Image 1 (cartoon, rainbow, N blue to C red):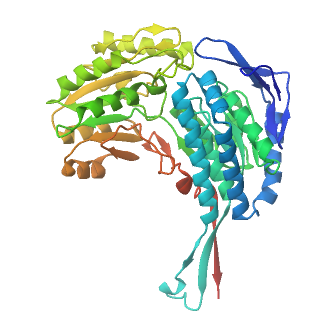
Image 2: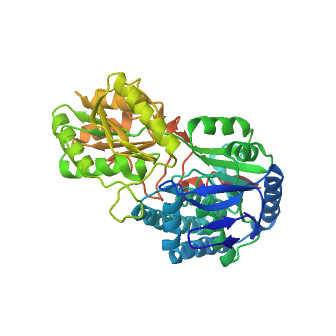
Image 3: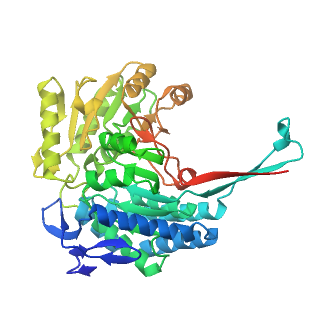
Length: 480
């Protein structure tokens, strides 16, 4: 791999702990100013075939590695991430437009993810089965082991270019698998820095390989390849559905879309905190977070107060250069995406939505936008908008609010502010959702919790303790 200055990276793809250069390249641009900041190899199908073969060869040995060896690899990765935190955070900001303060948090979270996975590697085990609980099982001893699955493929998006990959790479290593990682072509430079770490700590060759290329071509090839035993994808619903259809009999983990809701019940206390969390949850990373707040349902008795305070606070959000320490968010990932969102917002307004705060667009930046008088059919409510756009709607009863939450095609996270224990219990029972976050926003996530959704939000759960089950196979043994 060759580097120019600290901002420019020119990289090949990564296989067997080596960088393979190619003349065919993918250019990478800073979404804030459209400056070219690097390039990576544009892999061919033949390249990917060679990488999968390297992963398969590595698996033949690594599957027998002791648990402590896997744990040490994971902790060494975590330690190197800590050592290189600032450089990695700056690269995340440079290529994704994420505010630098949140890029640093992402590195911290990835460190935790690898350490959590190391703990799982050390405790991965099966259990005994009481064979004589069944007639005919007398005189037998039964137990099962969890054994490595094979070669994993991880396909990740632009919005968390380090920690989302960590949730695929870390449990794979903990399980004894090898992995082929394809990052987003919009944010591949963080992957290059990660590959450098793999070089430095001298892990077994072929344990972690990195390919770059067009999502449709490379992603679909990985999904359909017979030597890939598990596919873990984070991205949009249409792409996830297509990959799932191609995967055949292999394991598939999908973390897909959401239009996460937050409920503010009439019993909710501390409006200052609620408004502050609403601002961050709606607009951080320009709304480009799977669990960003997109729908806010407020009890009618608090609706006017909340709207007034939310709008006023949102007007004071600092937007701009993501390297500014005080900026909450910078650009969307591309100007074309920003234009698309702008068109959606104006279409909803023409259909009757009322803008409480209409943010202008400047290139790839969209300023905070808050809508009300929306209908369930409008795209800002029914689809994943993935932008700094949020809709606020009143409700009369808590049961009605839950119905509105459940009316979505998605079911990832919901945040509920309430002091009413009966409402909490009702929500736990009735919400069609992956995670219910009580007295906090739906954007809350820590990396050892089970994370994933229902309906079109995906299949399976991330979080090393939960994901590792998917990356292993049960092997049962019976002694007579």
